[in-house]
Image (cartoon, rainbow, N blue to C red):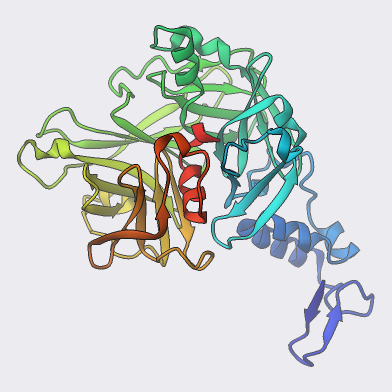
Length: 404
């Protein structure tokens, strides 16, 4: 790697012992390294490879890729290959691809785990896997190979509200949201997740033998009327009211502080849809992360109108419409992804992209409130969804983990 010295405009090799770059103070190199890691984990790897001095002054991510949240590969998303080539398919020969939501960079990684694992979810770039033969849950850092072991998913079967065996497993593997955190005192990795078939938050640590279900939240009653979003190691749940006079509620769920404690829920915001009649039933809200903040996205059932608010404003009792998301696009499915329009030329800035029929992707323009067909948004019938035809269809497939 070559760096340019501003004073002389001369290329300087940082590995040269006479270079001022190699002689930077260790504390300064470490500080710069952490700033680089906050932007892109793979840039941090390149940063450490510049010279021996920089490598020794920065922390090695191996064996710490999951234990230290600063090493989580945020912004990297598993890229579905499409056309039925799921992770672990023989034609892929153990390789999978990842793309970066902000830069559009694509990398191909060999991960032999997919021989006997399937992907359930992705949190901050860390994959949530299920092992085939015993249903054990495993966290996998795709770039360091670090793993963390969790109890088998089958320990939750008695809590699933489905009758048939096939439906129970399908609803258990369908994860609406999951978060990862690390205990300060014990150093154990904690996972909170919400399978669609369990009406409450499931949680476990890397030392537990079975999953537990939060038992003290009868008032919250998490069900199909809610939306779940992981953010900074916590879960945020948006609950829809049951009547026109009711209020939407946003619950913040903190991870357990001790091995024997439960996740801690806290009501942080209430708001109403601005209507006074039964048409409130035609609208739905969901949570999305964009630019390190939480947005509340409201939409009518026919996807002809969207409203976007910042959760921080709603917590203060303000309902301020958001008309710009800094040139990004929000892709909305079962989960939401914020993608930079600078990374892909076909993505229009400040839009919301969402399937409106079985054939097309629509994009809603926040600046003027208009709806149009996405530039390359043609998709196939529902049976062909695992085989998208364009980058936008690949990204919208990322919003539906069951298709992985």
